[in-house]
Length: 483
Image (cartoon, rainbow, N blue to C red; front, top):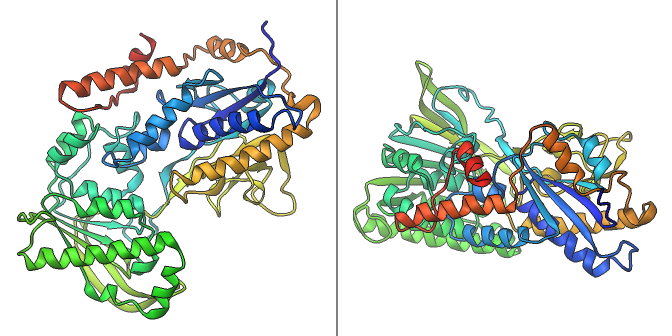
């Protein structure tokens, strides 16, 4: 028995939210621990159901985001901390239960992210050729349990959504496979799939106006530089009234987004004037239409397959209120992708707030409650949520840092009030969790194991002059990690 007196924290999910929270917990404890009567030492065990860490950064963002490798590198530096112990390939609720964690840890923090799409909810949503963005993202990101092939035989496609995931999906559908391979870590099956993609025309439908979209400037700049793609806009969409311009100017990010969209309008005009070219002035063989104030109302089919999409024109006031006009248009398409939001994962034994799509927590402060809302909702001691598990599928990766600071502050406050300086878990042997998992035949992949997978991916990439080439088979990951 090797009992220790350090605080013991379990974190469920090794994506950005879980890793940032682990780092911030240790930093804040180092700063405030003595004053709070907690000491400055803690052991954090980070449990991840996939064989590898990084969640959303590795599996939820398009591979051609230039900033992703920097974020992954920063997360990796955090995991290389002797006070953080990585347990990949361990699924909460299956390999280890909540009661077993509470017996061994002073607090449990859920950072479980999101893997499912919100349903489209339109007539025709069940037709063959309608896809949720999450599954497509899993395919092109090589998610361990995702599809290995994707049907890319539609020549005309629609993407529904006014946020960054919609932008990612549209960009990958318009991508040149060789250009993508050269710049990213895509595996061979994704390269072959995108190389065979027949899409020549893409329509992106955004329900509200130019000033109400939720794109980041970075996403827009990536859209601007697609080889062989002509961007096409409707100039009427950019006829903004003074109130809308004034409202957009109040928020820095919105103002920057609108300015970038006006840059795209000019680019689109130049592309047309130059004889339907791409951004470099080369002949374009694919057309990418961007439709604002366009609300899809029905997916039309024939013989069970998508044949068109019906869209209603809308107007949007300065305060973001959308009004339907009763004017409809149909566009011939053979595939429809919807990126209208994710549904964060549930956790066994934890109440879920269906209306807001996140784990039930008190007033958004991250303290888990017995039910979603109402007078009966009681705070459950020692249980917390952060990231999308806490707030629902909103905000960029950076938002998880401010989230983590709030949750960690609350955790430290609660631990300082608990008996014996927060050390409330009955079993304080740090090796107890290893024995429990071993008794069930569960073989966790630790940080050293992940580094073996990463080294293999880098070596495979180097053979092709690339920085990295992703392994997608979970059994291969396990074999590499345990070698």
